[in-house]
Image (cartoon, rainbow, N blue to C red; front, side):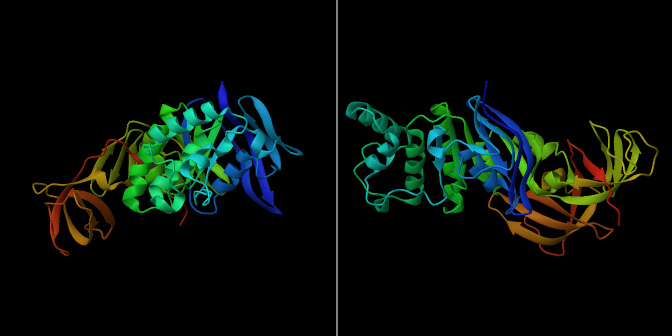
Length: 356
């Protein structure tokens, strides 16, 4: 049974449509993510799921129970949904214990104590229930906010940009920790973020949103290696589109050589097996271009970004086309230097050349 099901969801502010016909189903125990740039509609959609907003069209079901349709909205507190906010929203005058146990209305004292202690251990704060929020670090406060959302054992947990106030290192570590906590509790969850690293670290399934629509709902692997359209290809990961020419249904030629494709090349006249010469734009990611001193292909170093174990090089090819290459950092080349490169492409991502 689907824990969450959205069918044709539409939401408008006046004449402006913010969410436009969104549909997806989420199985019990799945962690999903709504990923997209600011203004794409992802937070509005999350608020509709939570019950904070009416919807203009469609239907939302939680555990096969209709909670939203036009003219009918189950209040948030009756949806069995836990919410984790961007700013934690902890009660500053309550202890950690009291914050976590806040939603356990009607529970016996012993049951409440047992559940709070269980969650304190789960989030790595055993024995610290007597502290107040201001005595905790940002990461600890976020874990307490998660524990508070989990305490009543909700059907669904919603996380709205939960790590955006944290530094990069803590954000990456905490996203893995939160995933482990959710999985250990068997929770179904949806994360909203614009950060693809958070999405990849946490989610089993990701819906990439743009202009109020889901552009692609898929696994992180497929979004990166098999993007469904040009927007997804450009938004997820890094890369540069380079011009290519279709040789046949399985091969496309770019400046650096011929690429063999495991799927039909999407050619510029709209057929999969057209004749030679059709133009496409091919996405080359930094890991597709390998530094190789023995290669006769040369590229000029235009820019470099040191990343510790790796250096991200911006390279200029003979034609003037620029590409990216991720190279182990012991290969430290100067700006203006020519280096050898070769292609190592497992997944060819090609789209029709747009009209100029």
